[in-house]
Length: 234
Image (cartoon, rainbow, N blue to C red; front, side, top):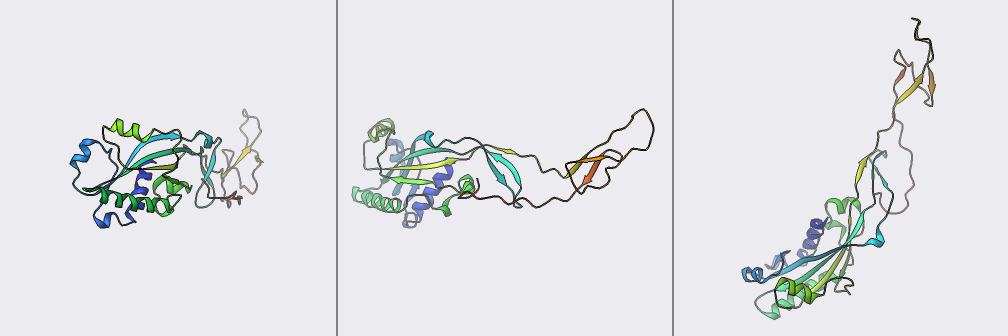
């Protein structure tokens, strides 16, 4: 899920024209060594904090349907996590860095969620909103000065970006629908007699049970209609 959020952020920033103008988009830690190796204008999107949003943890299991509407699996609810990024601009002059940071700010504050067209993998499959908060109050997250201290660099202008993304639950395959009828037959096993007709249980319109006591396969009925409770099925 984390790499999928990274790619969505990269795509969103690329659409603003950064890459077209020769600006690189990196997800490295902006350490002193990294800054010394940089040889082009760069926007650095550094992930430095990952925390679960316990208030959104659900319970139970949802149903996964195939193209015909049959239940094929059951999946636990997604777990929600907050990913906090430190976004900085790197160039030869402070004016150029501020221009880049302003362009990034204008791009990110224009949306409050990652666009659906940029979501891939499990994020696209779940079809849930991936919220985006730029330069907001970062409660319960490391202070920016602490992050720079840990990186061994000097404090510089930066944007705090928080993404709330779901981690897909665990899926377990469901048993396929029953297509054979069960037949119960009573008789004296010690006598060699012709088997008596069996008695069908629960299943209707089943043919001759045969010598083994089970009916042949029957046609699979259409899946029952299910009520949508808003949003897409998990």
